[in-house]
Image (cartoon, rainbow, N blue to C red; front, side, top):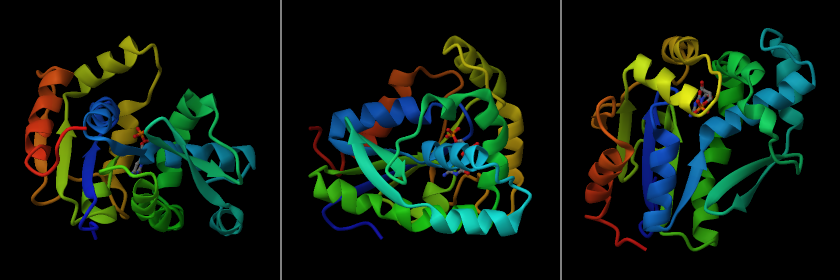
Length: 223
Ligand code: DC
């Protein structure tokens, strides 16, 4: 799956487990494309809510999904998904999307719609001369890139994660999203066999990144 010249790093974990912060630092350090797949699920959710297509109406959902056109543009080192040429708005981080996203993400047709797009980010990284990509989500090391060069799984105590969200001034349904994301039938949130499991509850972001970096540095020279 991983192209010989491009390094693929998968980072999975629950909500507010530190995936985005560590991914962004690694992307800068090793000149990698940063791909936040949670933002893709959030963008699709916002679009389906805008079109008033409920997660419970599979027939309407399939029709809507078939019409969505995906493309990518770069925002710094991050891949931004465009739907019908439009970037996601700030509302993808709002409580309304927080409450709905796991329901849409549990639907196999929604996940299937994003599968090829996510794997296609390797081509984006290549086209823009990155050394590889760091992709964060829930099923990256298990489903999207099971043969990634590095697969990390981040854990953190739920109380600590709630504190992190509060410190960001954001309201989030962390426990409920984790429950739904872990219990769904298709591509649930699991630590895949062979992934490097890191508990960040009592570790600073710098410490977590240092562990990841020392492993990645065995294959990649910092940029
Ligand atoms: O990473 P995040 O918390 O922004 O993700 C938002 C939601 O998207 C998450 O609750 C479940 C879904 N998601 C997913 O099902 N699979 C992924 N690879 C990434 C996110």
